Image (cartoon, rainbow, N blue to C red; front, side):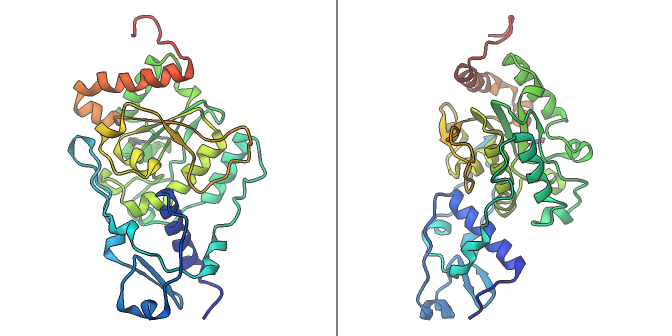
Length: 304
Ligand code: URA
């Protein structure tokens, strides 16, 4: 039995483990050989350098109309995961581990991301990677779904129509876009602006988790169902997810700052959804007011 794995396989396994970690699963165990021999298909079976992923383990990430989150297939988490012990060292300490300056840390993470080809989005027409923008020491972070056409061209998140609305939302909170940090769950534009697949989110989001740990915000606002679902690893509808704070720690990352033990996370509607259904703006404003209260922000005169 080999003790080392092909680098591609390692990367795929590391991404899969992070995906399970994000869902709160940390304990993996080996199945007996008779099971691994193939009578029972587990979500991931690793043996002699081959990955088998059952169809149950891979479901789509499409939000329902009205931004509800489609139910996650329970089988994806309920079945045992058979895995070689040596893949755990695939999750190496992050290169930014000993760096405390957030701007430097973000630079290291960007370098580590490189000209990423980790998921299929790299070969589906993306022009460039859209890493994130803003204040590396921001108290407030916004996380969207993925770049659209304008973002793909400009290399910056939320610069199109949805971005204009996000800018207005930020202004209404009494702050400037430059004061916050803005990023997405996936850093490459999905073709035709389709919703990113679960696999793409699982592959890309560890970099976002590292960005969050670098910035150490007080509050993260998840914009829309894909961001909320990926960050919280929860399956509920937007209606259920909104209206409260969650205690949030970026999955799979240890902060190197003993004074930062995670932050609060709030969920609100995606600006693109608000453009389609402006009647929901009042609800989104309630979410932002909750965030403002937490951060001690006051709306500029004229907004309430
Ligand atoms: N929608 C997103 O989710 N992110 C962007 O950057 C732009 C639009």
